[in-house]
Image (cartoon, helix red, strand yellow):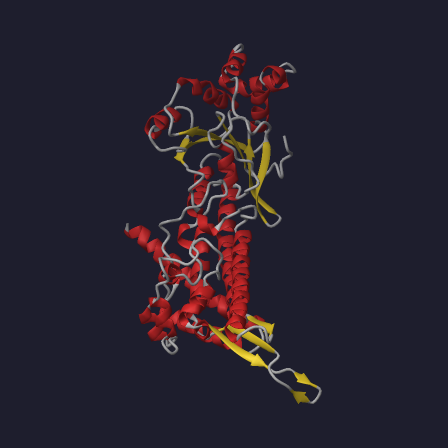
Length: 479
């Protein structure tokens, strides 16, 4: 077994039958997507420690274990000499020190060795979607013999059909029984579970309360880092400028189409980089998500559906004074052969098609530059393009980024399934804050990108994020 990080920190040894979601629980509670999770029984063959880290600090450690294979034979060994209750821990030690035990029941010796470490507690995992069976009782009785603090978690892998009968049975062996789905659990559920762990062993109270405070404080830092990443994306989008040499072989329309493709590519890079930063902030570094797997975000930036979901309403555009020559209204009202353009493709993939429909100058600004030769300026030597001043594009980018944040920030690390978020609602923004953001974004374009501008924009985005979260909490409470 891997060495422990610190024997003085709480260690939760996660045990149970094979294929009951032990590794998934470890991955979620340790916020560690490196834990190997597989539906094949027996994937975990040795005990492995996964510390829950914040920087260099370890808050607590989860220990992943193999599944019980021969619990009835182990219990027979223990009961061959039944000492009084205070002596049962000694009997446990005899089992672990017996040189034949490792040959007779190697998985159980691996598990029980972890349990007997100092400051270790037990998390026993069962599947609430299958019926209770007497075959589980030898495992639970062995855990009783250990004398260690223990909790049972009912994991509803395929549903909650048998949770009630599991609760009745488990309460005979465990002081605390909780229902916990490691695939769908959100941040607040993990905090509640840590509070429950406090009651297992009073010696853990101080460490676990400190861990809760640290995780809550880190959540604030993650929000701030997310706001900064989104601010960088918005400023970068505002500063996109591309150019192409003017060739006598290309007409004006062809030059604009070429520049449109370059703008599209840059926008896609900006959004992908922003989303990757959010992945890293929430320790989903090995997460691979395709936009077409995320129903609410599968539509590219300028599709009718994306504009409908993420763009400002006509009323908001009017109130904020963003409309320019009818461009914003045209963007909101247009239909291009269906509900989306190139659904599932990259962020800027539909830009060219919309530009062709509305006129490229509606979304982009083009101009010809004359390059000096000596003291003369002769002809137009290149054409440059940038996004127009229609900030609805920036707000769509903002809305998509905050929606992505709301998904990733609550995604359990033990969840390795495909992502289908059909019912995520795009955020509703406060107009006053959007007006402030509009001013800051427009100002950011007039000069060089500087730290102050980025900080101010990030501050407004952070306010938007927290306002949205507050509204979501109120909605949940109302329901």
